Image (cartoon, rainbow, N blue to C red):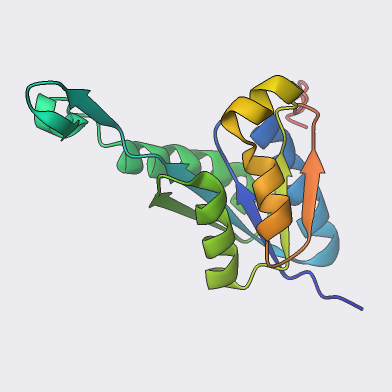
Amino acid sequence: MASFDRFLVPFDFSDHSRAALVLAGDLARRVGAEIQLLHIVVPIVLSVPAVGPTPVPALGVAVDLPREAERSLVQLAAPLVESGLRVETHVVESSSIAEAIRRYAEKIGADLIVMGTHGRTALLRVLMGSVTQRTVREAPCPVLLTSSVAPEPGPDGG
C-alpha cells in the first residue's frame, strides 16, 4: 500500500487553491502527512522598444514578489500549524508553473500533489495551455484535483 507522508499544495492565492489546501489539510490530519505549500512567482519582464526586455525592478517597481508571497503563505499556514499540522512554505521563481511544480515535487519527494483547478473553457486551455493538465501528465506522483472553492469559515472558525 502506498504511503502518503508528504503533500505538495501548489498555491496561487485563488479560491480554488484555498479549497485544495482545505482538502489537503483534512487528508493530512487523517494520515499524519505534512504539507509543503508552494507558490510560484513568474518573473515579470517588460519589453520597451528602445531598450529591449527589461526586468520590472529596473523600472523602479519596488515590490519584492517572492518576499510578499512568502509572508502571505506563512500567514495562511499559521492556523494549520496551530491545529497541529506540519506545514512548510516555499516560494520559487519560474517562467513555467507546471515545470516548477514537477521539479519541486521531485525535489521534496512528494507522495501526493493536491491542487485546485480553475475549470477554464476548452478554447482558453488550447490558447493558454493548462497548468493542471501539464502537472497531471508530468507529475512524479499522484495528483488529487478539486474544482470546488473553499467554504467560508463559520462563526466557530470551522
